[in-house]
Image (cartoon, rainbow, N blue to C red; front, top):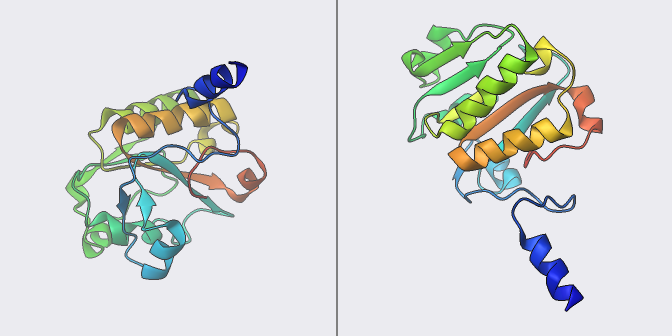
Length: 176
């Protein structure tokens, strides 16, 4: 009887187990790079966080994502606190319509987090790109879990751009 109760509790979707990957819709957006697709299991997972960890921004990390964005059904791309404004001619050359891009430059970490969470769970965005730690302290694990839940609700591609130092902290991100 006790094992049944424990198993029932562990099946609850609100319980996160450290050794379990987040639940996703199972849909993936091909990256445009077959070897990367194979490594990721068919591409960028929809309904999940994908972390892009880098030593500094502006070294081509967004170009890694643009090749796959051409095949999205939902076209709106929400950019939150990008360190460099997206270059419209470059987006156009990459096959992304600049008019599909919304750019938000919040003043606080709280506002940036709120925008990211709302954009991810709304289901209106094909992808949300967020640089949250540029406006404040590192994101706590609990807040990352909220973002993961928001991405799952909206079945959204959520890309968090974080410093390489974030690699030493726990994260519910499906890919990093």
